Image (cartoon, rainbow, N blue to C red):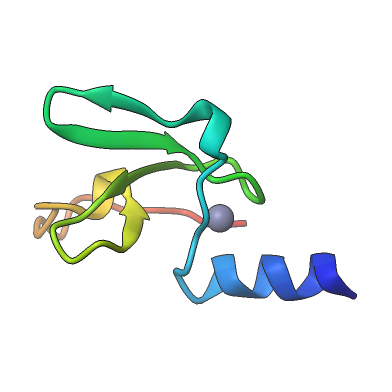
Length: 66
Ligand SMILES: [Zn+2]
């Protein structure tokens, strides 16, 4: 049940990074989501977002979630 709720958070874009895997890349904190494994980065507002979603206004950037 708890696992389902965690996955549900991922589905609505509220990912949680695995703290052990968080690293710095320049000034960015990045790391994989501990539930679904996608690469995240911490945005300016403190939320963890899909890396490719940042600055990706291009319509040609398709993101597939399973
Ligand atoms: Zn996730």
